[in-house]
Length: 216
Image (cartoon, rainbow, N blue to C red; front, side, top):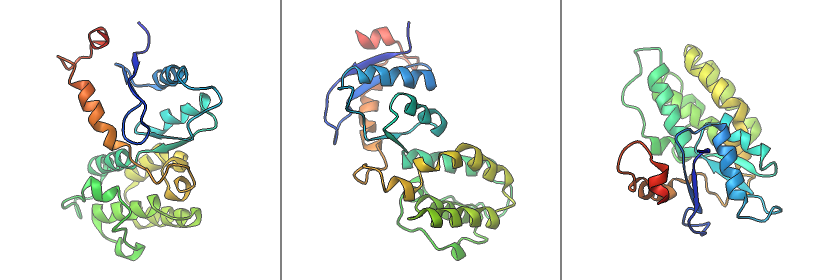
């Protein structure tokens, strides 16, 4: 049957989605297939300058095989959502749990506190320290913030290991010091296009996608 269903719907790069794709398996091979389908509608010499992705960075890193000159950037909203999930699941101590900060607050630079205000701050202290790494304006400041995050929260071995394995190898996708140099017009979150996804889902009569039904 192939990888999925792909339909070019409209082109308005500032406000609307360019295309919609539906699949039952979001893996590296699907995204490679998706890029190939999208490439059929553009001139070969015109590659996207930046791709803002909401999928796992190890998968999106595979975009480089098809679009080697494009920069890959991780959606800050989806990054924050996953970090909050990881903190809830992997936090070791019963102390300092409390009410976690909101995803919207974690995903914005405003409110980032200096390091000394994060020490001993429990889960929210950890999240504030994490924000210091995400929104570090220079590579040196990122490296300093990451080092202090590991020192100040050394007891959170599982959480730190998750960050090291999942996100640190792909730091150029989410650290502000790198993404500020991308031609992204200050966009770090494609979520406003999410309404289009909801509209596409409304055509499904069941929770199990039927690609033939959608195509018809």
